[in-house]
Image (cartoon, rainbow, N blue to C red; front, side, top):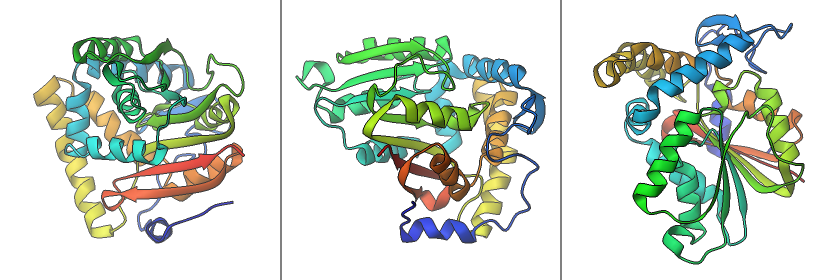
Length: 284
């Protein structure tokens, strides 16, 4: 079952570009031996290592990286994600690929649990990269954030949690870096309680308007790696991030993947003209 807003249905008309030669269902070949690291086909284990190295490299400048990738709009997009989640007292959130705490801190604020405010929100922050988790812990200490937080180093494809553990699952700008997206979605479904909410914030491979899409593609290809070189001395990591967006499925295809994982009441909402989307599904 899928429910679409008017802006959602625009995405069905968007792709005017020839598709890239990837498998949108899991970004790996049918034999399961290779995966796409940006535009490079690599062994699955090698992709995991390379993605780990990318985020280890950018961990200390993660906010800067997101500002470069989004023109600073990622802050508004993440706030929109939390608005869609509608945090409430007693909610247990699992935030995957959330090592720096961006989503977790917003969630705790929404649940009234920042700086000992007395709320009952509980968030488990999981990231496969220990460097990203280190940044998050430092930020929490620096900001004086006191809340019910667990920090776990783990894989989205093999969550270290029992079945039906959490009320909500979020992943922001992380799902496209997973080697087998279908497995990550199945794991999300497994750990959610019945009635649980799945939310994913991710870049779209193409913008809604073809002209803007071409301009944005030129900007991304030409400028984002250069910014990475100038600001972080790391053009290759930023080039990978651009390429990984192009390899990610379009919103309707990703929504269908969520449906195959078992989620119901599926919808997505385009943000900033289709630069990214918030995907929503429920375990019912």
